[in-house]
Image (cartoon, rainbow, N blue to C red; front, side, top):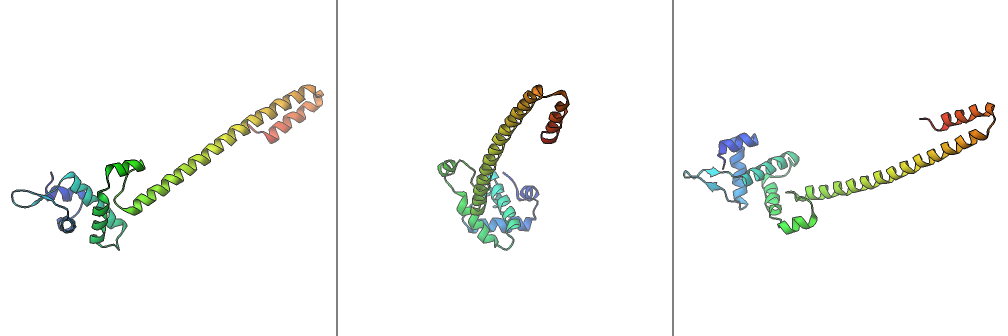
Length: 160
């Protein structure tokens, strides 16, 4: 449990901002615990909600606080089984979920490309090794003055 002062320090926000945000959350249906003097007492869940709102305000400055709170409250109650069925985290804004899915797909695509490049490099290294072996076999059959030509070919086309 946190007092308003502790919450302000944790969130690095002014007391008036905390009061305003808490009021908007209450209007959206969130219930805060109260102490014996009827002051709000904040929980870890409250911290996450307020922190999410502060981040959203920074990322979406043109959006009203009420609209952001509505999005947070609407998306916060995703069932655990639904979140697990996607096998990924669920974020408080639909945009973040869409962006996460995009980044996940991009990551999978990059991994596939990397795998293809690794296979290509392994195949290329094998072919270079085969070519060196063939050139060494040819060198044994050449006259002594032609042996320098083989080394020049190796140096030119297959640098170390």
